Each structure stands twice: as C-alpha cells, then as structure tokens.
Image 1 (tube, rainbow, N blue to C red):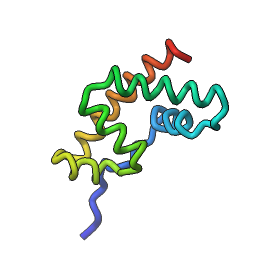
Image 2: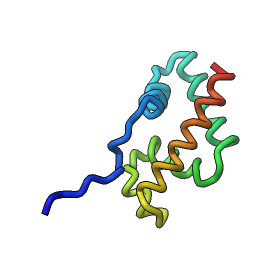
Image 3: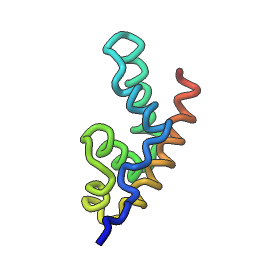
Image 4: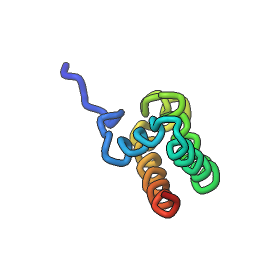
Length: 97
C-alpha cells in the first residue's frame, strides 16, 4: 500500500522562510530588536491558539502532526491556523521594520 501524502510540513512557503530568517538573525542590535518586536506581536496580536501553535512550531521545533496530536486537532487545522498567524505577523512587522 502506497504511503499517503499529508499536509504535515510540506508547505514551507515564503512566510515560513521569512520567520525562520528573522528568528535566526545574529544577536546584533538589529537582530535583537526585530526578534523583540516579533515576540511582542506574537504575545499581543495573535489569538491564544495562534500564539500556542506558533510557539510550539518555531520555538519548540515541533512539526504540525505532533502539534495537532498535542492539541487534539488535525495537522491541516494546524497549518490553517499557522497561515493566518503568519499573515498577521507580516502585516504587523511591515510597520515596525
């Protein structure tokens, strides 16, 4: 029986790469400022569910399947929430950076 493709982490679009780049910036003054702004946006502007998923994915290095199991939702639901959260992050980052 052939393995079925899943949503999982096969989607790593520009938003994902951009967030990973921001989080991986050097600890210079600009990198620290951008990370502080991003964390402020995550804490103040995302819904509790968006915040939880973003923190698990980017800061705890969990994949969408594992996050889904932990939260009792499908990996597709995790991906949908992450997409909305990334869009919100980018909209706010435009004004700060």
